[in-house]
Length: 327
Image 1 (spheres, rainbow, N blue to C red):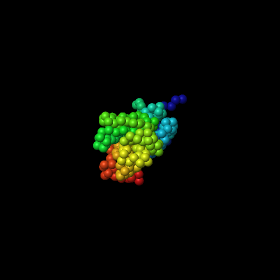
Image 2: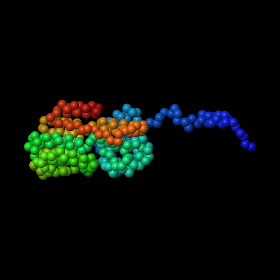
Image 3: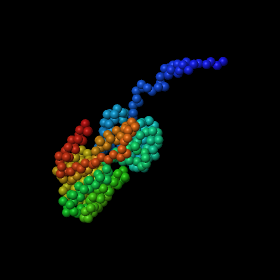
C-alpha cells in the first residue's frame, strides 16, 4: 500500500531532519585555524630574521605557524615538505635549496591544494603562487660598485681580487650575485680575479681565505658572496696581519658584520644588506592573501641596502634595528 503525502508534509520532514543533524550545516561554526609551514635551509642571522618576520605576520593574521630547517640537505628538505603535506597544512613558505631538487615534492603539495610561496630562492615551473626576493644580481652589483670605487680611489684602478662563493649551497642565487659583482669590478681593465673558491660558512671561509692570501700575496681585495664568507674573509685578513693592505667587501649583513664595519682596523669596507624581516613577513602574508582569494604579485623584489664603513651613522642605525628585532 502506497501512502501519498502533501508537499507541505514533505517539507516539514526535511526541516525536522536538518534540525536533527546540525553538523550537516557549517553555518555558525568557528572557522578552522589555518596552519602555515615556513622552511629555511640554514641557521644564520638572515634566516632567523626571516623567521621573525614570518612569526610576526602569522601573529597579526591569527594563524598557526610551524618552522623547520633543512640544514642545507636536499633530502631533508623533501622530507619536510612531505611531512607538511601529510599534516595537511594550508600553505608552505619556503626558500628551496635549488630550483629543481624539491620541484616534484612541491608540485605534489600544490596538487593537494596547498599554497606554495617561495622567498629568497624559488622553484622551476608554475608551482609557487608568489615569490618574494631581493634582487640577487643587484646585491652583487651594489657591492661591486663600492669595490670599484675603492679600487679607483685607493689603488689607482688596479687590483687583484679573490672571491668566496656559495655555489655548492645555492647555485642559482650564487651565480646571480657573482655575475653582478664581476660585471661591475671588471669595468676596470686593471682588475684581475686571482681566485674563486666555495666557502659560505664562516669557519670554512677563514681557512679558504687564509689559503688564498698565502697563495696570492699580491691579493688586494676579498669579496664574500654571503655573510659567512664575508665574516671568514675579515678574520683571515686579521689572522694574516694584513689589515690596511687587504680590503674586504661583502654581501649580506648581520650584527657581527656591522661591528666589523665600525672597527677602526679598516678591513671591511662595505657590504650590501638584504631586508630579511620584511622578506619573511611579506612571504607569509602573500600566502595568506592567496588563501583568501586575493590577487598577489607573482614576484616581489626588495632593494638591498648598502652599508659602508664611511657611513658610521647608517651602520649604527642598522645595528640598532638588528638589536630591536632580536629582543
